[in-house]
Amino acid sequence: MDTHIPVLLREVVEALNPKDGGVYIDATFGGGGYTRALLQAKNCKVIGIDRDPDAAIRANSFKQEFKDRFEFISGVFSELDTLLPRNQTYDGIVFDFGVSSFQLDQAERGFSFRFDGPLDMRMSKDQGGLTAAEILNTYPENQLAEIIYVYGEEKKSRIIAKTIVEQRKTKPLETTQEFAKLVRSIVKRHDGIDPATLTFQALRIFVNNELIEIDTSLKKTVNLLSVGGKVITVTFHSLEDRLVKNWMRANAFACTRPGYALKTLFSKPVSPSLDEVKANPRSRSAKMRVAALIPLNIKGTPI
Ligand SMILES: C[S@@+](CC[C@H](N)C(=O)[O-])C[C@H]1O[C@@H](n2cnc3c(N)ncnc32)[C@H](O)[C@@H]1O
Image (tube, rainbow, N blue to C red; front, side, top):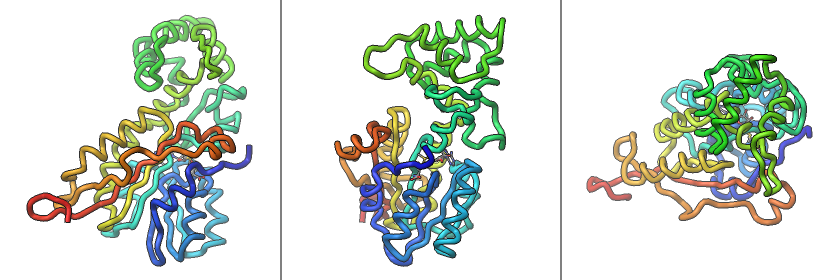
């Protein structure tokens, strides 16, 4: 596939409710689906961020089309504060976590068990970090088991790790199909979902340090938002969603920015409609959460 269908696009734009002259951060630019919708909705500015060098290439055409209403910065969103100009605040920051279809559907990126490719999985390509193959072929068994259990919630993690270590004694694991076959020989599922799903998810999260990235960046957003500015997250599995939910709850009465707190805008996360799931099955597990930065009065209650 040479495209990425933005998930919960209408809901994200409605929740952000962009205004003329507003400045917004699209912290996971990907193919720029959210960025484009925001720039088309109002005469606003969007700064796109992504760690994937391919996203930077896609951003070039946005620069040509939207001129100084669009800017792109290469980097990880855990470094939002240093990537962005100092002493500036923003009307909204949106995160669409996980991988894009561009990444998933390119066999050579090694994210998917549906294709055969090298076990890479680095969103930043060769700009640093170990590949999935390097981890699988060098990490001790107990650490592999922990990674698969903690980041994949895969109950067969111990036996998978043991089998990886057995197998690599004769031949290192190199391809996604080799690894998927190994996992499928151990995990059996009867719900139509590929048995390799959770183990691939675990490895991808570990390779890209995804949960630490999310945790670090959320904490930084409160200092980057204008008063009333919103942070919007779209998550795809419970580990991501739990981090966001707990962070929003923990900041409901006070946050690291003195005198402010976060007001959660929907009591329940927003899920895609049945029509959206039908048109784009990848959206089925998506959940959107929204919070706004609000000032507190001297008694610590929202003004
Ligand atoms: C689900 S896609 C976003 C798709 C986008 N909303 C669109 O409509 O095209 C997630 C993107 O976030 C990027 N990404 C993931 N983690 C990141 C991080 N820690 N820092 C910067 N970019 C990241 C990925 O490289 C990927 O391009």
